[in-house]
Amino acid sequence: MSVTYSSYLKVDELLQCQHPLSDGPEHDELLFITIHQSYELWFKQVLHELDFLMELFNKGDRNRALHTLKRVDTIYRTLIQQVDILETLTPLEFLSFRDRLSTASGFQSYQFRELEFLFGAKDASKLDVYEKDSGHYKRIEKRLQSPTLWDAFLQLLKQEGYAVPEVLLKRDWTQRSEPSEKVQKLLIDIYRNDPLLAEICEALVDIDTSLQQWRYRHVKMVERTIGSKMGTGGSSGVGYLQSTLFRPVFPDLWAIRAEL
Image (spheres, one colour):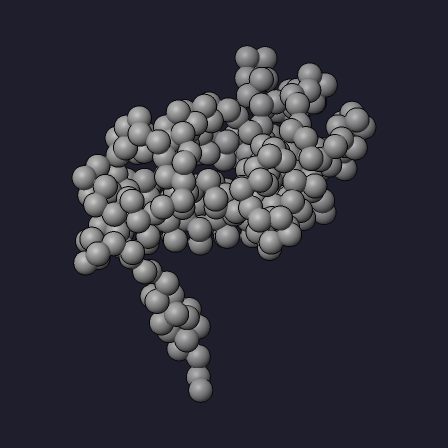
């Protein structure tokens, strides 16, 4: 049989993936499921793009890397806009089915954890949420033990002839990377003398900004929906989410602003 729109995109299978658990079911539960499933699809795409981006950094393909960075930022801007849709869900509408979520929580999203680790927020304790030796555990553990996007960027700088400290290139990948004054001096030189690499730096800053905006919008959406109540799955809810705000994933790129 010839390929059709539905067969290529598996539309029938896709539309069978939404199963509200509330009695009736409650009208608004489908929206909640649809939004979060779409988030997971976008997470899959971002992981796909970032893995490709790291390959491009390793190959020294700066032009294609810049293009990919811009695509990733555009996706994150789309994720921010999707919060607008979630905010149409009033507190009472959410409460109509919230108890059905039981122990389910966004903190259990293994793709979200993979993205956190790729962006450098390494924390081995995050693995405790997942059953050891499960497929999800192994995926996140692999990210924990692998270089971050920033590590790949530093390798690109080395290939371009910049004197990146060897200790940073051979660091323990399971740990968070720390800001480096030596790297910051290299970045200042790049901004002043290497326009294409400087544009890549700014594209990284764009993604960092979008990530912080998305976190903020998510916090405010949760706050307006459940206030100070405990989050689903026993999480601390808004309190924990607020603690994640305004933490840049590429701190060296922010530290140099005043010296440019």
